[in-house]
Length: 143
Length: 213
Image 1: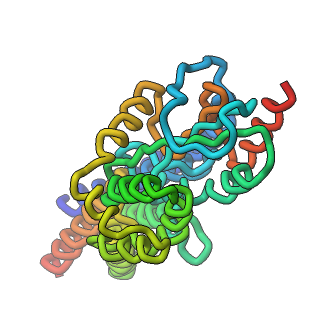
Image 2: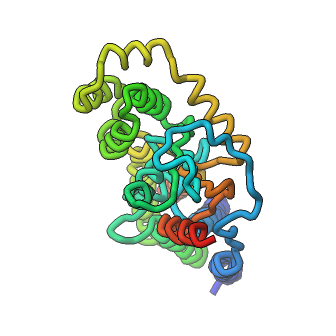
Image 3: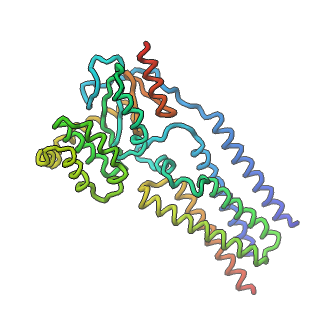
């Protein structure tokens, strides 16, 4: 029962992350010259060379990440005890959070500007990792 | 297939369609501001660093910040206008943003150089080296080197900076900028009309239109 709720939570947070990434994608797609807004950081982060990774814009990577997590949690709802699915979830969310740490480091020390939505996405990915981790503990206990 | 799987799957598909559709819809319909606002604002033309004749047909005011990457991005276009023989007077006003730790110091430095007739040389040097000093925890040593390179009277610059001679001038620029609705840099005004540029090249188009009037 507990793992069912955890799985639902993973699904909900994946949707939230998807929303944040979609909003960022919308922000990125807006045209207009790059400006430095008073007190703001998003435009600065957007205009930095770090807004793309291997040529792919970061919000798209975010969408792929949350979509994968969402699909995995749906797959798990079908077969909750599937170990491979759980390992995949764990692996992907670790990659996601590690990437988030790297990006937040860039914001703090290299770009020196924060983007609210990017930080929010980072927090959501941490929550997802924590949930997946809890879910794997439940799994272990049951074994 | 379990009911739970079906429900979650449906929710995911619906959410995805809503989000992607939303992005598409919003980016299609987002209203862009006109390039030039109709309202003519009263700008104090006695202030600021100027290049070009006072009687020039077009007065282009730029509110800028030496530490702003977007201002650096605008520089090539602005420089080309400055170097042209067009009837344009360019007026530089300070608008150092609070998130840029060395913005105010750089503005002071440029004014101190201006006192010795080298504002624009310092302006150019600051933008050209922006990436080198922006990331420094303390840019003072770097700025001192610029002072030396431009052959300025170092003691005089130092005294001005220590006394904070130009603090009020810079504060005045910021205050007027805020009154005029400046909330990002660079912000341009052409003969008192605020510009919302889609690209910096649009600046040339707007100037040419104004010159034809």
